[in-house]
Length: 401
Length: 195
Image (tube, rainbow over all chains, first blue to last red; front, side, top):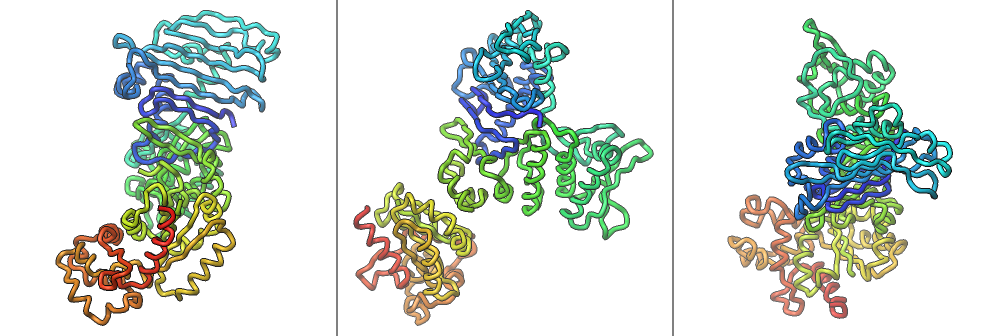
């Protein structure tokens, strides 16, 4: 368990005029009608990841430009798009402080710029928070005596150094995060870099690729065979577990083989006990390959700090969703925080009330509420009603289209 | 607030059409439909404690189907007695909701103009509506173009709710289903002081 996002604030980002999500857990599931803003909420994470990997301009352009990204009815040159993430970094010990990363993006004369970027936290209840990073339009400073803060925060004085970034749309997190001496900044950067908004594509997963040494499944799942081969070679026990689960869940499947052909390509083959020759992944069913991919993704020996999955129920048989929910929860407990969106009552039935969040769109603007904040839902849940049942029987107000 | 617990979506659609005609204002009632009778009955223990806290009255409406009417009612009563903290009523459609439609041939004719109400009204089979074993199948048989026009039962329920007779006094114009009349009586009784 490395990091946990506890709160998220978003301003003027597409459907989210003013969003504040609190009480986030290790495993969080988001429920809402089509177009209510589930996908947009996940876009926050991919947007921030792109800001880091590339720069803010690229991230904005990928979403169709600033005027598309900023909430309708906002003023592109007067209003700002803002993100605030409050998280704990448990690498800093059990009682790690609540850290805040704040990013404010503006637009002027055709250019995107960073109005403000701050990474701050304070230890304990008293004392001023230290701004480990404080930048505006490419200019700002970072704390260089971090180690003092760790030891005697109340006595220590922060020492800052100016470090221009050279551009108004580059994250200081990116520029400074590469230096060993900025430990806090560096660890947050690494964290953000490993966020994964998974979007498994059946076609991509079936592609036959060159032999490679990928250890983690990509966004589209196009390196499924390589990752499976990595697990087979270096984590055989995990591979065996996946295989056992496949046999239980997909009728007929009795083995999964990984072979390398003469052209140096890696092939995934699914054995069916009623045929002598196994099927290569190209000819297996959508459900089979999807289930295999989820098992590979969720049995990752080094979980991502944050994993987002949209509608994992697609292509899967409903009764398998309970097990999938359990696996997602296990993944979350092992280390990664998990965010999932769903339309499946069977999946929701498997949840605890604090894991469920409701996405509601009212008058063109979306909000996210914890199901636990609704007294009636909580009472019914405690009386033994399953959450998926309550959802289907319209006890979640304002959710249905 | 009056909470209606009904067994399926058809009954919901029917009530949504009938209640406003009896003067119920939209914010004064709530309908919760279920996935069949068993889904409703088996969840009573879980939902009634919460619902009865804010409801003045809970009305459960289900189909009799092939069960014994009184036994069914007593089974629900026994459950309700343990968990309900407000007034409640149990109304049973004999044998199914569709009996309430067959009880008013004129209303069927208003939904389906090619339907000849007089032809069926005189038949002996339709004298005792509540004793027709499978009224939903009968309805499908006698309504022309059923398959073309009513791909789903709720659609017909929604439509006929606008036309079904709410007459109580005049026997000529009233719905011939006795279970419908009992249902109607219930709605009218406390409608008087709450509407």
